[in-house]
Amino acid sequence: MKTLILGAGGIGGYFGARLIQAGADVTFLLREKRKQLIDSAGLQIETPQGNFSVQPRTVTAATVKPEYDLIVLAPKAYDLDDALASLAGADSRGVLLPFLNGLDHLRVLDARYGRARVMGGVAHIAATITPTGAVKQLNDLHRLTVGARDAAHAALARDFAALGTGAGFDSVHSDHIEQTLWNKWVFLATLAGMTTVCQGSVGEILATSEGDALTRQMFAECCAVAQASGFPINAEEQGKALAMLTQKGSAFTASMLRDLQGGQRTEHEHILGDMVRRGQKAGLPMDLLRLAYTHMAVRSAQASKS
Image 1 (cartoon, helix red, strand yellow):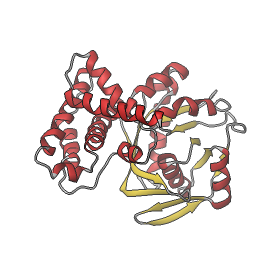
Image 2: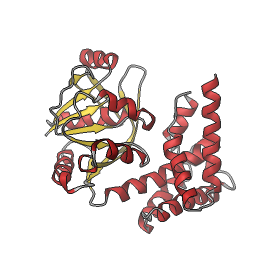
Image 3: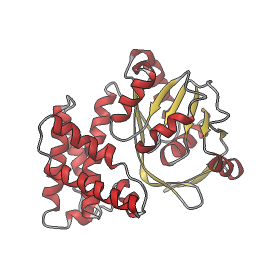
Image 4: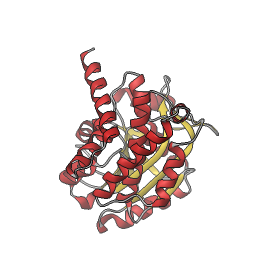
C-alpha cells in the first residue's frame, strides 16, 4: 500500500512517522519550507515516552504524481480547499482518508471525488508543532479509527487499520465510521464550547459552582443534534465522554482554546457553527451552543480587524 500524507502536522506527522517506523510505504506532501526542514533534519517526534525521528520521502504540489493507493488528509477544516488544490497532481487515483473535525468535509469530498473514493477516519491525539518544527505529542492518547463508507474501499480500510496495529499507536477499524465521527464531534463541540467560553481548562470549569451542570447541559444539546440527525450517541459513549468532560482537576482543554489564545485561526465554524446550523434545522433550542458559537464568531471578527 502506497500512502501519501498531506502535511506533517500534529496528526499527519505523528501517525505518519509511526507508520514509517513500522516499515510502511509513506510519502509526505509538504510546502517547500516544511519540506526543506524535514529533508535536512528529519521529521522529529517528541512523545511522553521519548523522542525519535524518521527520514521520510517528501514531495511538493509541483512534483507529486498520481501513484498512491491512499491519500491521508489532516489539515485544519478551514484549510481543506487549499489542501485539495495542492493534490491536483495526485488526486486522479487512490482513496482519500480524511481526519478532520466535524462532518462537513465529507460533503465536500463526496461532491468532488464521489463517495466510493472517500473513506471515514477519526483521529484522537493531542499534538502540536514546537518552535523548532518537531511534532510534540502532549499526552498518551494516540488512536486512529478508520472505516469504509462504500464497499469499493472496504478492503483498503481494513488493510490500513491492520497496518497501524504494529505501528506503535492504537489502530481501530469501525464498521460504523460515521457514527464514530458523530461521537467525537459531540464530545469535541462540548469541550471546545465550554473551554473557549470559560477561557479555562476542564478542571477550572468544574471547580466552579455551575461548571458541572453547564457542561452537562451543553453536552446534552450536542447529543440532541446527533439524535435528530440519525446518529444517536449511546449510553456507553455518553458515559465515556462525560467522564472526561467532568473530570475534576483535569488540565484538558480544546485545541480551539489554544488556537484562540495564540492568535491563530480557529475551526469554530466547522465544530460549533455547523452543529448549531444542523440543530436549528431540527428546531432545537441549543442555548449554550449558540452562545459558544456567537462568542467565537465575535472573537474571529475582532481578530480579522486587528
